[in-house]
Image (cartoon, rainbow, N blue to C red; front, side, top):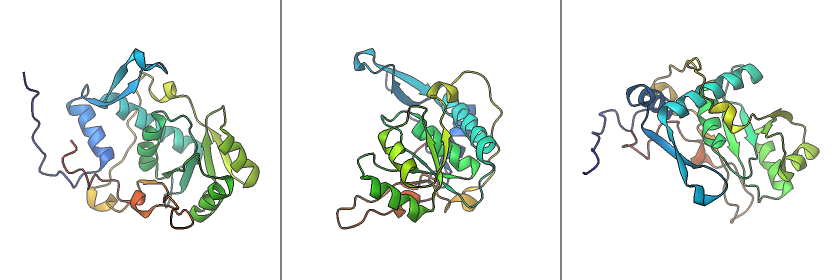
Length: 211
């Protein structure tokens, strides 16, 4: 049997990604949002994560950020060096948007002076790190004054306990130019810079059929 084709909403291309996640978590909560490895052994396969799961994780993350830092004003930048990567990356991006912040992800391959220069360009003084810090994190903390906060494990964000929805009421018109996430250029033609293409609106303009 062929999979059921979903119709494209009339508002496709003019919706916020955080709103899409919240809406689908209510209308079709078990729809698969992502698949993540069951363990570090690839033979164990993948575990599907539903829209209901990611919506709950994002709300828990946004509340955690507000409790820790207060409500963001002007989208302050939060840096983190998660290596190896896990699904906290996506959870932090969406949670930061709701709480009024923006995440900055820098390549762990960058030399220390590049990491510090990027943080200075972004005027970033907030660093979130797992309890087991990476060499990059240690180097940055030894080289620049940063406010360090310990990131909870992935299971904290994805636990099954219900969580109060974090209020996010911006319309597409209001939020279309809000920061989404900050990465950086490759630096092949000179100094690495925060990538303006990664600071686009938090609406899926390049993915109009994402629904």
